[in-house]
Image (cartoon, rainbow, N blue to C red; front, side):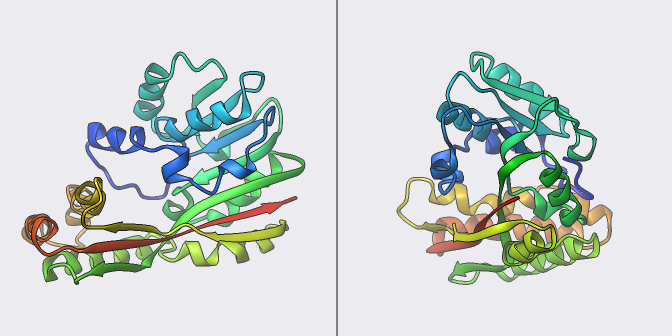
Length: 263
């Protein structure tokens, strides 16, 4: 999938984030849609960790396809999951992908948030569905994030710049809440919305790592290069936020919805 803008994170760090994901923890509303023998496409699959999980649900008689436009992620996934024989990972952009066979289910997790043309992406997915096929999109409303207590002012400044940087590139910061309308415009029916908020509380084993996602985002210098924040302010945001995580942070909630629809 070709995003209009992409945070240029260190390749190893991004790969680790993708590899740590599972269907059960990071797409927990999806398993009820997965049926033995169905053909599934995972759009923007990263390294294919979630695709691998999907392959386990649909069974060995049917291949799951994952596509991503970042070659290093696909190559990493091919090496990590080379023993999963019903998983096919392809380095290709969604809009250039021409499958040999249509799909029963197409999924995209945390992907459409990076596009300025998500409606076009939905229409492309719809074209690749079998009759009565279904689309499932999982994505964020970045405008509704909740921290308790508020993070340091330096991180708040960075986050405000992050939202503006995204908006100026045409990305929808509240796409989770707009997806159902996009589905209607694409002509999909039987639309359902499921809340999938990610809520992390101090004391959970993964609390520090999950809350630290924003200091990882701030490792990129892209917004500095494009004039949205100074490098000094970016570095200050990382330093103060990481300190806040270890001292004052109590919880973080990232607003997330799954929206499904059929043709």
